[in-house]
Length: 108
Image 1 (spheres, rainbow, N blue to C red):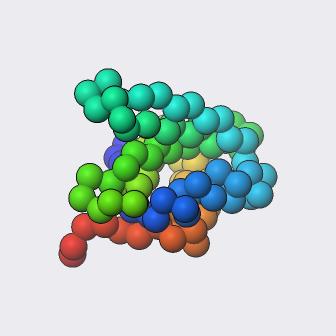
Image 2 (image 1 turned 90 degrees about the horizontal axis):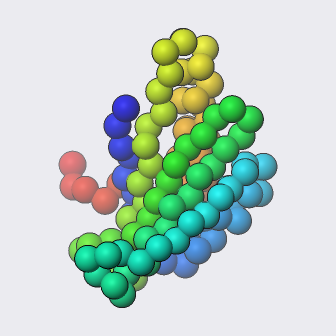
C-alpha cells in the first residue's frame, strides 16, 4: 500500500466533491483544524462505491499558495479479483482528480 499525491488549484479542490458525487460515488467529508497550525483546515474524504473505499485528503500545499495537496492511499487486497476491482475504482478517482486540475507536484 502506498500513497498517491497531486496538487490542484483551490477552486478545483472545492469542486472535487461534486465531481465525485456526479460519478455516483458515496462521499463522506470530515474537516478538522491542524493541531500544530490552528489556521489550517484539514479535509478528509471517504469515497465509496459498493464494497470499495478510497480515502482522500487535502491540505494547503506547503510550497504553492492558493493550491491544495491532495493525497490518497493506494488500495490493496489479497484476492486478485478484489485487488483488480479496487485498482479500477482508484483509477476512476484519479481520473476525476486529473480532469479537475490535479497534477503531479514533484519534478521528474
